[in-house]
Image (cartoon, rainbow, N blue to C red; front, side, top):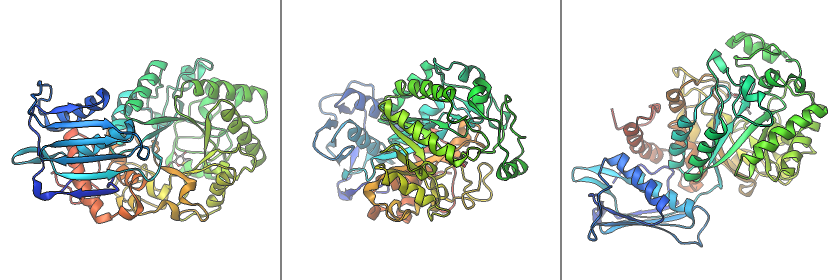
Length: 502
Ligand code: TNX
């Protein structure tokens, strides 16, 4: 039977002869309440079956349980005509088993059913992420909640939120109230901004936790800080208009950044904090201190990319300071790969590589710097899994700087250990797709750019390298997309896939 399992499991045996499990209400769903509730909701949404009826003892049982001992996040799934069993090695594993069950739901002339299968599954990488830029355009919590649900269905477990940039500041902080009060109301393209209140942030964290996702908040420093100028000008410097900045302004418009005025263009690398001054250190202590208290997960992302308005001596001092600050707060710092060029970076800092699948200009050397300092790497190769790149020349949204458009196959056809010489599988914490939102203004825009390429990234992050298979992926994706259609997801019908639904 054709099915839409993405990412492809580590091991799967289909029992096509046995006919599978016909789903007739009532069914009995037993197990931990949260897992049962999320599965029930998923089945009801997909099938429309009235699962709230009281089950009778003779109804087939779908049993969910946790049996410790297996690899973290792993699960086993067995479906036969008599019932289904999902056993997770932990709560996350159980949740992933139920996500597989939902992907396996198949509509047949006899009704909705589950094919008879045996699956034994575990992730390749511990960190399977999606980065969402809510700074260039702001997305309210309900949009982020739907994205969390859809990303978690692909077995991703990290949501990295890019919470500040030149165009706006998106999180209310009590210790620096002017950031949200004065620097949040604008966005790229002159659109309206916004920010997360404490209540909204708590709601977002709760949704992520319920879907076994860790949130990584990023405050990008020392560059990408023009918005800070609107609130605390004493910690920022005047914009530095390099030839690259002038070129972007010429190509995309949006005007030249001016101190004290909101910036709504696409240029990067012109803003910088003042480095080596106590006012700035106090600002950083307030911002990252409060951010640490608002973050249940172990990581804080400090940015560190494209600080073109900062001298390299200042940059080195700054990266050493901010990564130590985060360590001192009991969190592990993460920084974009440029920071790996700083010898004195805090030991154990995680690097996020956003270079090319074939590195150039020393980006690989910077990435190795993190590993030399005892850290590991998150791989976000821009020419593969930057989901804000156009699919092809006809894509209305998106950018093309990462070596032109990024068709679906390019998002799928790369191997994490093959990018940076000298980096072993054990040096790689995981894989993270990124969606920057300069051109992305609405939830529909977001869905069109994220899906289906996020499915490719998810399979690279979860499935063993030996199980990757482009023709097979495309077939499974077409089935999976029928579920997106039913849920109204505005995914892109990328070339090369025989999409099933009209
Ligand atoms: C590069 S990736 C950036 C972002 C832009 C993105 C657009 C990275 C660390 N910096 O500031 O939004 O390109 O694709």
